[in-house]
Length: 114
Image 1 (cartoon, rainbow, N blue to C red):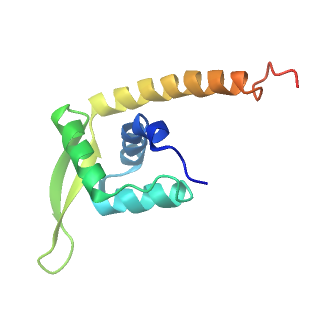
Image 2: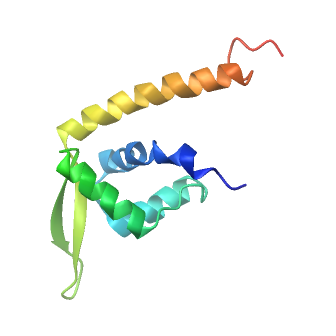
Image 3: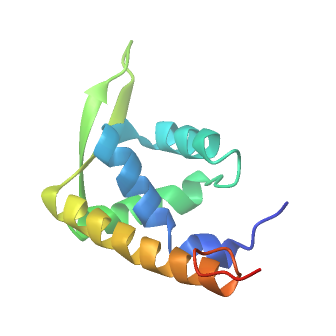
């Protein structure tokens, strides 16, 4: 089933911060991990990912560094900052409140009567 892209827009940064909380990653690695973990629901293109990462870096949520990846190949890795960790915690709480409310309205919450 195709998912409306507008539903994904607000959660992409939170998902990337979650990945980076677990380990430092380079861009393509983030794309592949996000795609695999979401059963192909979240499939970012480089043209979407890198501007978002640059914005997050400018905001102080992530930092980047270069690391050799073999014969003369260098990859740019991203790492979550303490500010990014705090932002992730806040976004998780917002998501729990939002998704819980949606589930209640849809009748799938603990107060559902049908």
